[in-house]
Length: 348
Image 1 (cartoon, one colour):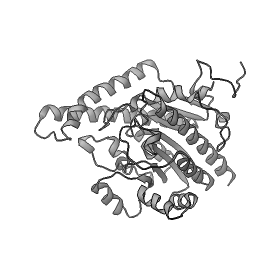
Image 2 (cartoon, rainbow, N blue to C red; image 1 turned 30 degrees about the horizontal axis):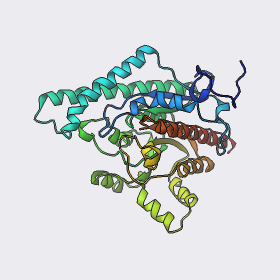
Image 3 (cartoon, rainbow, N blue to C red; image 1 turned 90 degrees about the vertical axis):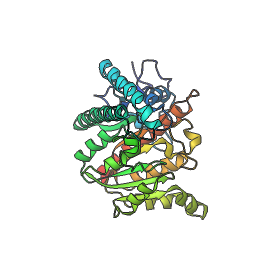
Image 4 (cartoon, rainbow, N blue to C red; image 1 turned 60 degrees about the horizontal axis):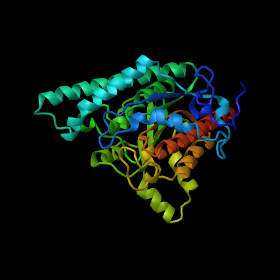
């Protein structure tokens, strides 16, 4: 049957209502339904499926990015044993993590909690390996790889795979939080530590963070002493500059100037205004508007830099499906601007 991009999505269709298999698609989305170390509110593990369903309501022609679907987009269908295994890891790690989180990570006097912490860290390491192996295999097949989390711990394996494939890359990190804590609450692979762990990868040259507005002194100090390897654009400073008359376009130019030619996008949905993601695990007042974020991604693509991969995390679907709706539309922008950047880079 011929595919009609203007028609309603078929019930058996893939992401965005598309018919593509992973073999046919240029963009491969790897779902990682895991949120065991979420320290405030859970729910992000349900995001990949919720975004998949919500994406079928997204019109495929986009006023900013055109027709990304023409390049082929497919979400990896995890084999049932793998899907069940991930779900089991998430349930077990989440159950063991709860009393550790309740204790604020203080497990020194409790051998049972110490054993639970070791097990949680082991399960999270297994998720990292799963993501790394699958992302690397997709990259070797010539795919553009996007991770759909899950909490923000989930893309670390993909960041590792991309940093090995594109050594010297920069990470553009949109988030309310710096995620530079070391082993937050004792969890080595915490969602609050993903950028700390990413900086340990030798292939990551620079981390540029945007929208930060909720971080601890340890993280602030780590940014300050990084000697320019971490460049932070704090949300209050961005807001103040706009209120004083600076255009968002000029601020985008300032943000991206520190990025190298090859860029990995890491997008925590709580980098947006909470009205766009009210059920995310750790919402924070402030943040970027939807089109502020899209214009920033567009500025990266239009600068001649190449976006080599991306992730979207911390979307926690609520009963009204609003978060999944926004997440699906942000995902389409991520894909569209990534493809735009690849086309522009080829022409240079």
